[in-house]
Length: 258
Image 1: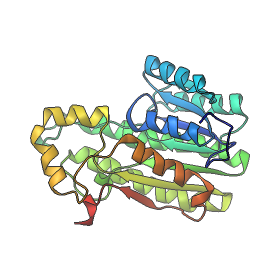
Image 2: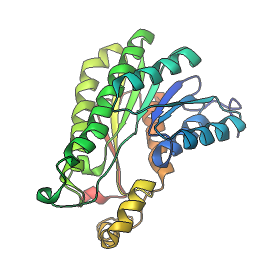
Image 3: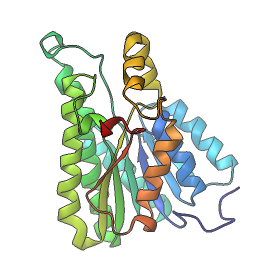
C-alpha cells in the first residue's frame, strides 16, 4: 500500500535513521515509510542510500538521504538539520549505525580495535542523540530508539570491544531517558540477536562454526530477518509505546532466556 492511504503508526512523523544503507537500517527505512513517516536516511555509502531513496519515492513515500559518518559530530548535525529543513521538524530517530569486529581474544586484538568499535558504536550514538535531542527540545517532543545488541546484555561470542560498546549504548539510553522524560522525549533501546545482515554474514563466513553454536542456544533456532528488528523499532517509536521509557526490548528468539 502506498503512503497516505491509511492511518499508520508513524503518520506525520519526520524520522531520521542512521546506518540506513543496508541491513536493519534499510529495513527500518522501508517499514518507517510504510508506517507513514517521512524519512531522512543517513549512512556513509551514497550509492546504496540513493538507490533506496529512489525505491521509496517510487512507492509514493517521502524520503531523502544525507551522506554522513556518525563518528563526526558536525556531519550528524548536518543530517539532523536537513531533516528539519525538508520536513519542518524531527520527531523520531533510530540510531542504528554500528560496526563489528572479527572475534578474537583481547590480547590478540589490534591496538586500534577498541577505538574503531567504540567510536562508531558509542560515540556515534552519543553524537546522534545530542543533536537529535536538541531538535526535539525545540519541537517539544520526540522518540529515540538506539540499536544495541544481546551483546549489550550478556557476553556473547563476539569481541570484548563490541560487547563493551553495546553495554555502553544501554547506559547512554537509560541516562538520556531519565534526563529528557519531562521534556516529552522517550528514549529506548532494542537488543537484537543474530540477524541476517551484511555485517553478520561476513562475520559468520569468517567463523563458520559460530553460527551453529548460536542456533543451538536459541529456542527459535534461526536468525532474525532485518524486518523483524525494524518492526520493533517502529513500534517503540510510535504512540503505541507511549509509556515505555528507558527500556531495552530484546529481539533474539529467546537466546538470552538461558
